[in-house]
Image (cartoon, rainbow, N blue to C red; front, side):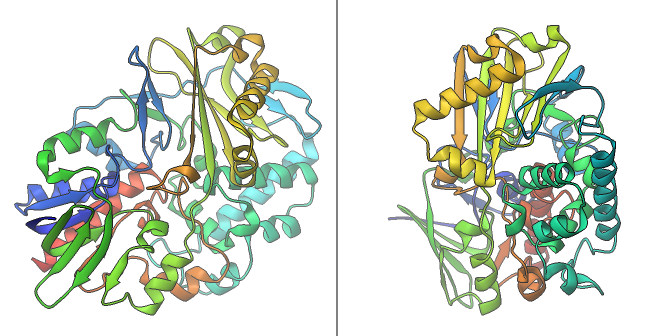
Amino acid sequence: MDRIEADVCVVGAGYAGLTAARRLSNAGATVVVLEARDRVGGRVWTRQLDDGTPLDMGGTWLGPGQDAAYALARELNIATYPTYAKGETVFVDAAGKVSAYRGSIPPIGPIPIASLGQGMLRLDRMAKSVSLDTPWKGKRARSFDSRSLGSWIDSQVPTKAAKQLLNAAARGLLTADPSEISLLQFLHLVRSADRGLNGLLSIEGGYQQDRLTGGAQSMANAMSRDLGEAVRFNVPVREIEQDEDGVTVRGDALTVRANQAIVAIPPRLAGKLRYSPALPTDHAQLLDRMPAGEIIKIMTVYDEPFWRSYGRSGQSVAMNSHIETTLDASPKSGRGVLASFAFGPFARSLGRLAPDERKRLVLDTLRLRFGPKAGEPIAYEEADWEREEWTRGCSAAHLATGVLTQFGHSLREPVGRIHWAGSELANKSWGTIDGAIRSGLRAADEVLATM
């Protein structure tokens, strides 16, 4: 087994790990990044079609307030462009009836709309009382953490249609059923967003506003090129051992001896590493209680974005469908691309189908919403993130009731020479590319302070 030495070993070449490695390297530290895959980006993954069309199969968008991501794009000379959002949104009600609307208000009637607006307003107001840095503290933290988001929606939102839409929004944001999500965690997510819940769900002025030219992985690729041979691929890490003088990080066919280590892989995977000595009980328990959500993302490619000529934005919202939402994911010019999403229990159900049956269901759904052309793509690509060995779920971890108030204090706390990074550890832009970048910068600064 090969053995190398460095000042810092970073585990994981997603946005958190690469950002940390870049800052450390720029500060003069020697760094080695160990990546289990044959690519960088982690939960951000851009596939390229033969004609060069980029398809973002994982994390994709940037939005207002995500200053760290925009700053990195400028540093790397990677341009952004707006997500297409002009025209009507397709709406499918619980009975399967298809209609279309403009603006942000779906056609569910004035009473359900008022109920939905009131529910969203109450969530925003409660979120303002949650600390960005220490959400497990505060007068109402334990009360919020003692119930699930699903139970809050059931008891506090009076109309069925509004309940269904809020539940769908929660599934989309945390890729899990609201019954699985602590109300406190959801409120912290809302608090971490620049424009609250409405910003989380919006395109223009919200989290889905902008895209990166060349695909969302383009910044990760650029950082990897700059780091050169410091990034080692196809090296899954199995064990991290600490002693008085440093850390030994053991991966397949490669061992790194370093002064410090940064673990920048999803919590579900970080919890499966062997640590010697063992992690403190609270930290180990926290990692065990941070499962990833489930999402299947399907990209259908067409000669052109034909829906635009029909006055449609490419966005759709459904109240009782495996595919709860779609968005226009076309590059700045060229092919038309629709992104279709299944979240949480719908993703699990869709994932149990045979590939041909799943594809047929998805294309039938798109025909219903966008017409016959939608069922005849020139390319069909899908990513079931639960089946990705080195991710095992996406887009971020969720926490059940009681976890954050019991174990949250361990979330970012170093364990000896081991530091932690990842979008789940961000206090702002939680669960996003921007959040991952912020966490990587924070972890790198922790390490530099010790050196």
